[in-house]
Image (cartoon, rainbow over all chains, first blue to last red; front, side):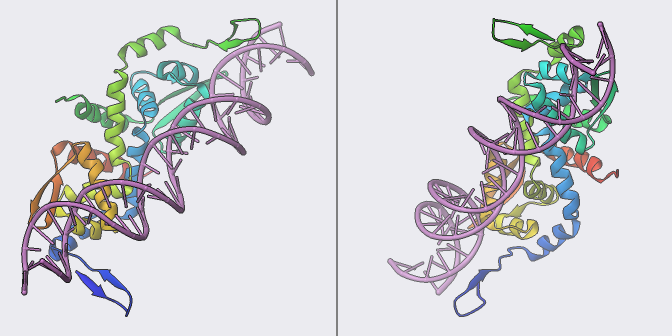
Length: 123
Length: 123
DNA sequence: GTAATATTTGAACATATTTTCATGTGATCC
DNA sequence: GGATCACATGAAAATATGTTCAAATATTAC
């Protein structure tokens, strides 16, 4: 629906099913929550990071071994690990000059498993 | 470990735990699978798309109502719906000039639920 | 102390993603 | 038929993201 808001400006105020819209809006989670949700999924949404997490789902690994497993440079892995750390998805411990990373909790493990179900079920 | 591969070139051949590396590599899924996995998570990895999917997890909605719920333009929603369609995450039906979208299957619904668990559990 | 190793960091670059805006298409209403 | 509405699409613009390379930090070995 086109509505005139000034002599020269019009605006669309569409809502085909206003009741449905307000019901769904009411049930929508706060923006902050949805952004955090999206951030979590984003973390899994890059092949390198998905591989890192899948590898860590099996065993604790140090940066250089992760780089070898994933097939990218250590620097690239380190940058990715920083975002995973910031999201609280991985934790680490230092042993001498080697830093071992592992999954922060089982949430990620089950998200990965469920995502793989979907990705591997095939047409 | 730095290895000289030519008079002027050196290369790092790091592997702190070679056995672990080969074990994890052996269990790693094919690259194609991991890319598809990442693609699926990417779809959920944008706030607008996450909101769209969360809304559709409740009810079938048309494009303009989705735009209203999510708080972006219809054009933007339409573009996002195209990527969700391409990934087989949503389906749609036409009713006159209105197009109603809904979730393609329950996979996404459970991924969303599980992601929300993580996003809402606090710190 | 110096040298070497494992990792982190910063900045530049390349690439991808998202939104906007204008236009195109299909359907209904008159 | 023409006008309008709901949606889709393309290209440009604005952002964001990921990798690379060089340099910095932390730890150990000597």
